[in-house]
Image (cartoon, rainbow, N blue to C red):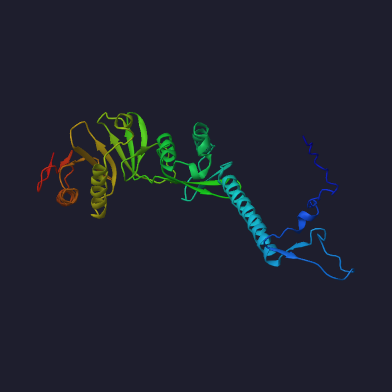
Length: 305
C-alpha cells in the first residue's frame, strides 16, 4: 500500500490589491473634472482626490442658494407687511370729528359711547374687523341725534370717527318733553344746529318710546312739511305752531298774528288744503272777520265759527 503524500507548494500566495481610502477619490463621477499635470509646481484644490466642480455645477448650486435666500426674504417681507397692517389697524387713540357747523357737543359722552362699544367687542378695535352696521346701530340707539358715523383709520392706531347729526325741522312737545324731529320722523333730544323750528304740540298721548323712537311716520312728516311750506309761501302768515289733538288724523295749524287754529286732515292732499287755507284767510281778511277756528278738512270747502 502506497502512501501518497501531497507535497506542500513552496510558491507564495498572490496578494490581491485593495484600493486604499485615498484611492476612492479617484473614482469617476459625473460633473467632475479630472485634474493632473506632469509639472511638480502645480498645486490644485482637492488635489488628493484630483477632482473639482465644474463651472456648470457651481452655477447650478449658486442658483439654488440664491432662490433659497430670495424665498426667505419674501416670507420676511410678507410677515413685516402683515404685522405693520395689523398695528396700523388697531384703534388705540379715538378722536371725534364734527364736520357740520353748529354747537360743539360738550363733555365726552360720544367718546365714552365708542369706548364702551369696544369694551364689549374688543376684537373690533382692529378696523378691518369692525362691524360698521352693528357699531352704527349701537351708537345711534344710544344717541338718536346721530344720523351716521364714519371711521377714518390713520397710522399707528390713530382713528377718526366722523359724526353726522340729524337736522331738525320741527320741535315736538309730547308728554311734557321736548323733542326735535328730522325729515325722517325720528325724534331726538339734542339739537346740534340750534335753529328756530315750527313747534308741534302732540296731544295724542303717544310717546316716542312706545313707537320705537320714531315719533311720526315719514308720510306724516312730509304732510306737515308740504302744508307748512305752501302756507308760508302764500303770504297770509307764517306757521308758528302745530297741534295734534286726540282726534284721529286731525292737525291744527296756528299762524303768526292769528289767535285761532286752522283744522286740517292728513288724508287730504296737503297742497290742496294749503290752497283752501289761503282762500279762506283771504275771504276772512277782506271782510275783517275773526273766527274761533277755520276748518278745511272737507275738500273744496272751508268752515269757520
